[in-house]
Image (cartoon, rainbow, N blue to C red; front, side, top):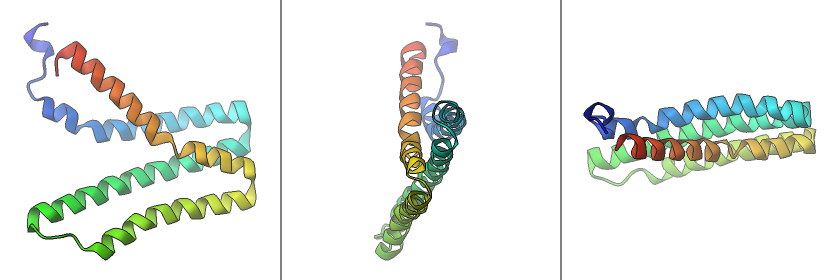
Length: 141
């Protein structure tokens, strides 16, 4: 391996994981929604698209919440406000539950699509893991 292929700062590569995961989630969401539309029809595809949007929002909120919690603990050295953290945490799940309830009332088939769409972060994280493994083996990061 040449010196040029090894990045000078592996930390910057790994710090970019969140952005890459979000981009992969967006691409996979569009591609898999189109595949669901072709394979299963509009009801399931609509539920899947809503599940993907909820998954992206939920993932972003989770990252923001964890960052804010870490900043508060490291900056002040104190304990984070328990009620606010719990409320934000529960709000994420309340949003998903409300969407599932509304979709369940409209169409059971769409609920299946919604539940499948909620697994979008899992697929994106798996893609990121494979990419990081490739980079680590190929470039020595």
